[in-house]
Figure 1 (cartoon, rainbow, N blue to C red):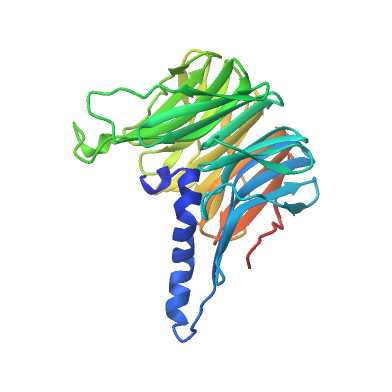
Figure 2 (tube, helix red, strand yellow):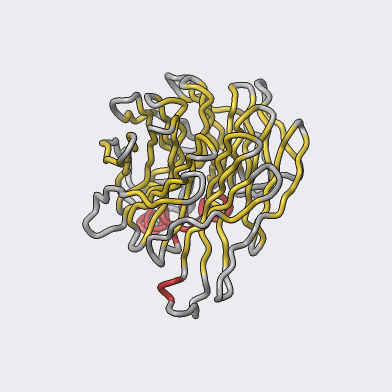
Length: 373
């Protein structure tokens, strides 16, 4: 559970090095006679589609020797991906982790060291803005959320001006150890929902089994307020959320021994939804969700870290979908669905960017550009 709770920001700030080590550690030992083994990794961790023919995905890459690293930005035109120039927004390894594009000419990408703004022609740095996740319901408003240590805060962008707001921390009888914000979704400047989880130290009472609980907060245009999810277990985390209205949001994540978790926001409370679990021994999780309308949602995750997991919500229930598995070792999955018959999935597999598209009938693996080989 703890390993899977690492947010996309931490993944890009630290885990690219971990990915490189995991992928190439065995290779280095196997080729000890080689004086300079090549190491590389690349990942896509966020994607946003303003239409089926206009999607932007962001992530990071790392390669040595010689040492190279930075943000990775690619654009989907409905047929193929094309890599775009991405200005560095911070030190090596600190890069863009999430993106939101309300129109083809407006995108904001965020990371733990800064943000990038797409104006339809090029990407430009946005000074002083950092975050774990971003949502822009229109070209004139965006909400960025971030958990940094024990602090939770948001950055609201409205009419070209950024304003910082302090978010509420959950309360509990036992001191809370850490808090994670993994996703945010806004329907207007007056409604946003952010989700994540919080944990207790190892000495938590009544037992260490109560260390991870889900977290949700909603924005009403003025303040953030806690919207406690319906925790189905003492070990649970929410990793993504998609809202279509103030009365309809779906959040996904994991529970117990890494079993899929989905909850629906009704406008007043969260309700746990039954989700298929393809693995008899658990170890399955939902990492991303996108709802193009209130009757249709797509969610993706992984099963045992070896194969992709896809589930569809149609009016009243979740059902499994067949999805291609290009490679193993998948993580950092992200999803965007501009319509019920058009979705784009991105992530990383075996240290390389991966993507698939949904056309309403099937998932198709797509060739995904990488700055490293």
